[in-house]
Amino acid sequence: MSGHNHNHENNTKPSRGHLHTHSHAKTKIVLNRLSRAIGHLTSVKGMVEQGRDCPEVLVQLAAVRSAINGVCEVILKDHLENCIVTAVNTGDMEALEELNRAVELLMK
Image 1: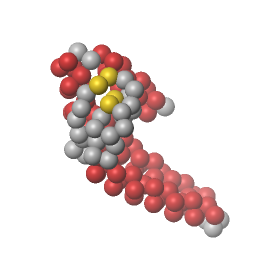
Image 2: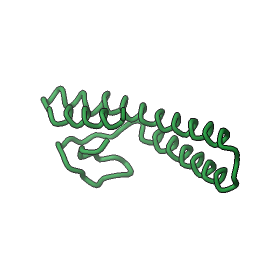
Image 3: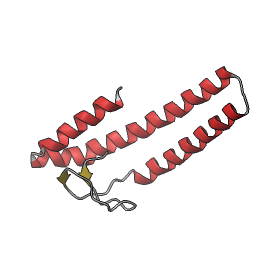
Image 4: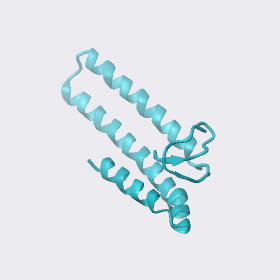
């Protein structure tokens, strides 16, 4: 989730917001799931280019959306277990506000 200064194994660029350093245990899982979702979405694009039936395309898009929702769930749980626990322990209200804003956007 954006708004945190994280030192991830693949991303050491700081972002705006409050400061804490940690690594996420689920980064590799998230990256693998995103790669699969991207591949699936590319396949759906090919289906559209080939003129495949709309219901077929819609079913595949539903599968892509489900995969993305799964990625969101992994990231949110990891964030709660790591960042938010730290934020609560340190009184970092900004982190809690940022989580609230992110969840509101996610639910739209």
